[in-house]
Amino acid sequence: MNFTKYMLTLTALLCLIASLTAGQNKDHETGFLVLAPDRGFLGNEEIREAFEEYRTGFNTALVVVTREETARFLKEGISFLEQKGAKKIVAIPMFLSEHQSSYQYAERFLTGSEAAKLTALPVVLAETMSHSYLTSEVLADRIGALSANPALEALVLIAQGVANPDDATKLADDLRQLRTRLSSRYSFGGYAEVALLDGSQSPSSQSGWTQFEEVLKNAQAKNLKPLVVPLDLSWKADGMMSLAFRLQRVVRQYNALYDGADLTPHPNLALWLKKQSNSQLPITAENLGIIFMPHGSNYNWNRTMMDAVEPLLSKYKIEHAFSMGDADIIERAVRKLEQRGARAISVVRVFSMESSFKDVTEQALGLNDGAHAGYEGMSSTPIRSGCAFYTLGGVEASPLFAEALLDRALEVSKDPKKETIILLAHGTESEEANRRWENNLSALTSHMSLVAKLKGKPFKQILSATWREDWPELREKAIENIRSMVKTASEDGGTAIVIPARTTRGGREEEWLKGLKYVYNGNGFAPHKLFVRWVEEQILLSLAHFNNAEPPAGIVSTPANATQHKHTGKQ
Image (cartoon, rainbow, N blue to C red):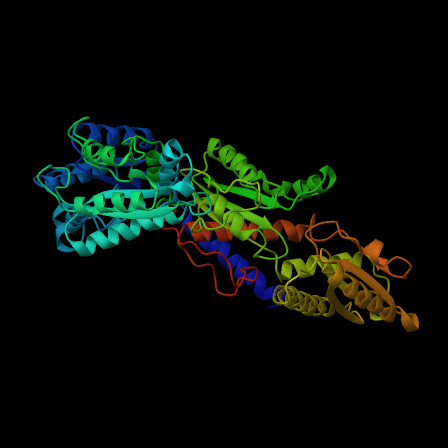
């Protein structure tokens, strides 16, 4: 893509974002209808307390789903939202799973012809709690309060409220998925998930209880101590009239680890509601937080990168997190952005490759399945927040990067027709990954050649290579090859111009090319006006993501394998 076409696509993206973020004070036009199961007095009070903690700043109403008068309660809640100016209804189902019968009962009122009887407004149904890492984090806390030695324990998860065996199987699968998110932190000797049918809080119902006791017996037979967690918004009329009390009468026979705690009370419920709501509201430059995450080094290196993005600080909420995806450092930035009013947060990973530190960053944000444990000795616990999260980055073969590197060469060039630019990058150990790096370098050199010709300053050649610098055996061969390139470029009156393809100043070119004749400019991508533009492009791409909009086709710095988490509340 040439420079003119690039500018046209960037202009189109700016226009798109302007249209998406017009009317920034219209959050009240989205009404959030929180649906919760009827749990009896104590359970309903716990739901209400979480709702009260969440509701500030949102146009929202709480509806308890009952078998007798759900339609009336829904109508009351929707009327309240409409009176507050709602033009769209988002129903947030505070149910563990869509396979629970109470959820399915409420869903019928909000879909198809039934919804038209309640409101003329469009109704969107958000996801249940089983899709969120925040629910897994409640489970982590429940386990942490009970477990002494996971290897000698069998984790048994309980949920209730399904109408048939098929839904029971699917509900058990949802429980399993929540437990799997914690696999990097807990390795139990055994596992089981039990879904109890409707009415199981009643002593007269035995549905699922036989299976539950069999699970406890099997754990004992394997010399494992059962650790039982009712991971649900279970029946809780009072201390005795509750699922927890009935479970207690069973588990004491098997000497199980059990304290009766279910999903409430827990602060993650309010966070989950906030995240669901923030994931449905328009995200603007005013309520988007940006975490700027380069690798990091000493003060001078870090200061250079900070100075590089200073022109953007007056336009966007930006916090720094210099690291290789360190969850604690990212969390510091998240908390600062929360205090500054961010509703959504995007981590811009400022590395050469899009894949760099992607997995650990996603783990920190709760965006992957939790299987990545991070680095040894580092936390793998995701950050608990009500903000919607996203991550992107990697300069890859961005034309902006190419043009900045060309500028570095022109800064030291005297006679381009006799000069050979040698573009050098870090490289990696894997042959496949290193080929990806080399392909990027090839694309960069091609664009540099094109722009140099357009400027009327064509170079003799533009070459590239990787050092593979962290792997001594590979590095020695690479050094030999690159030194040969520099020597050849310097023959017959030619000049080698060595340019590191790095995000900022760095590299060991002067050490590994010692004794050779060449011209060097090691300033890298930042600071440079085109680096500022690249960072802003990542911000605009983040806004497009959070507003469920596709950026214009052909936007040049969108990596081919960019992380995609659609903005649907699935966090």
